[in-house]
Length: 160
Image 1 (cartoon, rainbow, N blue to C red):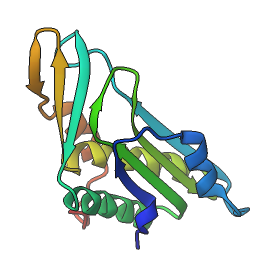
Image 2: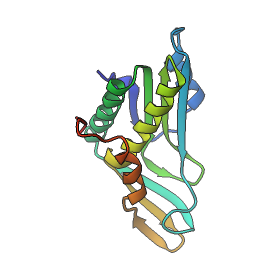
Image 3: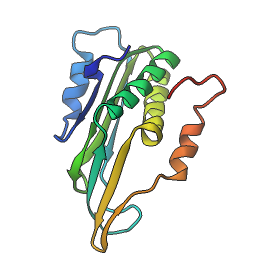
């Protein structure tokens, strides 16, 4: 089952190196670590993004992320996972999400990291508001994110 330390929602920036070291501390059974860092871009629905505000529903968001991580742990033999997602106001270039996955072998780590990000983008309850030169607006779901996540689905899926 998912340990609370595996998942964090916070406003403060994270240090990916520190988080990876925490995951690896005292371990010699890990053969591969794959990580993903998502950054705030200066363009999206409009080309002039000055900031992004990310909101979530406390408790519900952590539960959804926990379900996603648990599903990844049932699909692949993982030896560690850390997911950190920031909320609040951020500016272009700021790190927004970190996923670190450890396994004995690289393929499992790559696939699990990709799976977690695909499901995080489509199933975790976050709401994004972009602040642009021409005004503020809520960001809509992207069809491409749902298409990416659909490749992991099967008739036997039990998540969410």
